[in-house]
Image (cartoon, rainbow, N blue to C red; front, side):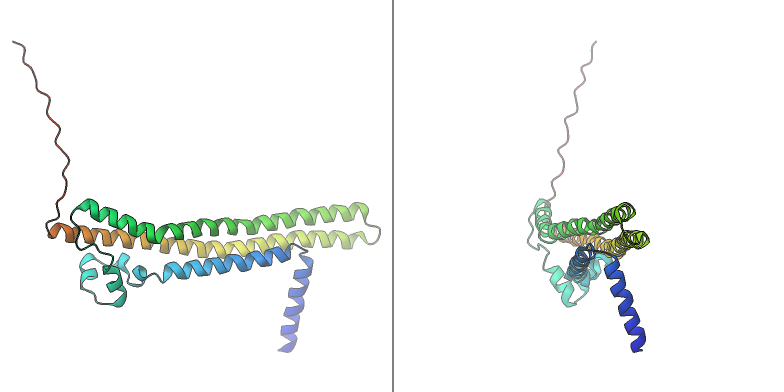
Length: 218
């Protein structure tokens, strides 16, 4: 058992040293990406509207269920609405409360995820430059210089892709949960509109356009 652990440790150390100096910023970027992704996923996934599954419930279920999260969701309803325009303004404020911060974090996460493969590409360039430099200026064993440069180029590229691919999967899950949150707010808005109409809330109808009068020529 200890032999297996030590062999894994030696392999990781060898990979780390073969990757060159770019392994340090890649490690820092990895920690930052996954901390941001997990924090954002938890923020959206555990939102009380999604915990209540408002986006999956029919409107009568929202009014009838008595769970704690649905109680919090019903508190967003504007029960004293005097017009449909007031309902729309209220839920626009609800969207402005919950969605812009999530949208900004999603865009930021997409940007830093893109930086992973770009750092790997930078490692490819520096590794190939080291390879060519070893082929031209090496005074000792040129083969070792060439192998070191190629190893640096391949390992950093591989690490950049290994960072980005799982992070993109997490980002897609975050976007899906964000869309569920949008649907939950829209469903509450429809429920609030129904309640407002039942309580006699006036609905403005578009004004009818006057029909042009025809003049008969006798």
